[in-house]
Image (cartoon, rainbow, N blue to C red):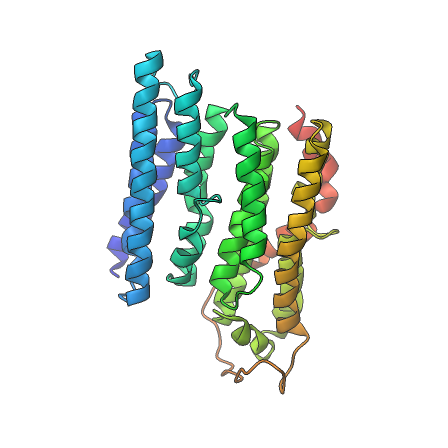
Length: 348
């Protein structure tokens, strides 16, 4: 792809998200989301592989459905209340429809079946954009509308954590595992959205940092399945030793960064007299933890000859810049001691 075209597409991607962030009118927010979708589609098809084309088609149809649903719901809201303002969602019907449309757009369960299939058809760089940047605009809208239907949000959240944990158990493809990990993390964010929007924002930020680190590690190792991870110790031994810590941080184990949002969310749910919901969420987190442990085992505790049929690859020097990975890796592993300061900021 020409660097000029690539720069234009990335600029459009950033502009679409920024327009959605800055908008207070539903039509402008919808336009930003459409720009986002249309800008990433050429990036997804740049490999000209049948799997990439199939993934792009699925992504386009899903996003078009969600956008049409969003437009219909915002028009319904304008018809019922006379308001196009995002923060003036007074009627429960359009609010519920918009919440479901944004859930479909962002990849929450149950309408999340498109996410693993789409992510599996993309290369790791485009998959990274889809898993991180593309979540920002829909979440900005979810945070602005303050959905009041607590039953719907808790149902979406618990279903997402369950599907995200259960779906990743028997996967061998890393991109599918990361897709199910994304669904589970989104479920945690949605669970606490109505009680503490600032905590949802914190969880989203930490999820972006941890996912960024994970994708960059897999990209550096050129790994797309578990067998390729098992031979990564020949390329970067130090990174191979640190990668299980990144994966366990995604799983939410103390004393790593990923424990912080889960801890605060469970605490908030308990404060709201939702102890059964908190218990179910904690149990589903164990499902996710299993497949992170599986990846860690395959990467660090199996050496050649091993029970995973993988051939040791050439030790070619990587051209990928290591500064972004180093920065995000430090944040992924060591932010837990800052929890008191962060909670103090959240309560301001």
